[in-house]
Image (cartoon, rainbow, N blue to C red; front, side, top):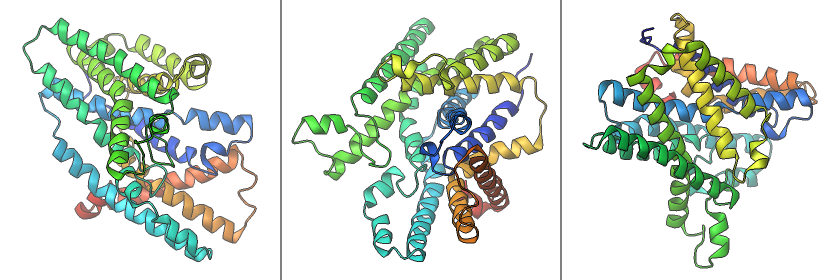
Length: 371
């Protein structure tokens, strides 16, 4: 079966991942699941960020293997820095305004207490760290592109990719169980190392930024190596198209096992969350690619896929505005936290963000700002 010109299944899963992120950040986020149903709802949405990482790196390598197009880091920087800067400013201002409206001027001052984290680590909102993570993770793509353009034997290149997966996965797992991975909220990395070595400190600005960048690159390395393998074999061997039912079925099974903890990797293996996230990201991506062979082009799904990054960036503001207004009008309406209130909030945040991003995408200037 010929490969579709557009991966509609990937567009669909991009939309599902964007909705998953709104679920994760609705009604208290991952700490707000008081019962079994809401816990499973939160868990089912946990594939979102791994899927976005896997998809971004896969598409970069897909362009490389199919068209020989190299990743331009300058273009990627421009593509990410404008919406990142715009939304960072929006979230900082919204948090300041919210604090002042609620009569907490000290909290408003605290919003800008850590400008380094706001500028480099996406600290203006809980989800914006993904943008610099994606950019710095992309640096390792250049390493693999360089290798693939050398005159080595294909078998040597393939062994390098497999070895890269193993080594990078071990590195990421080691960082996680030694408390050296990036800590969201504190916006630091290598805390375990700085606690052991007195002259190393995250209070040193340059060192703090350097440690975070290294931790991000290490986190992305397994994704990048696996993306190269998947894109390479899918392009040259057409593996997915030749065994669609088998590939889709196995991917779905792996997704369920890794996501819902049927195989407790996280508790069995130190740093096992790294393996779990990789399995979630690539099982959902491969399932999406397989489904693309079976799905017809759909303008709504294509629009959803095109708007998914903008939805990711905008959703948190939509959720905060919705929860703020509801609490003012009817304080108990969204209480207690349950699967129902999480879904109500998430659906509002998702639909509102999609509508705003879709509207902004029709203008060249606003399109560059929001997505």
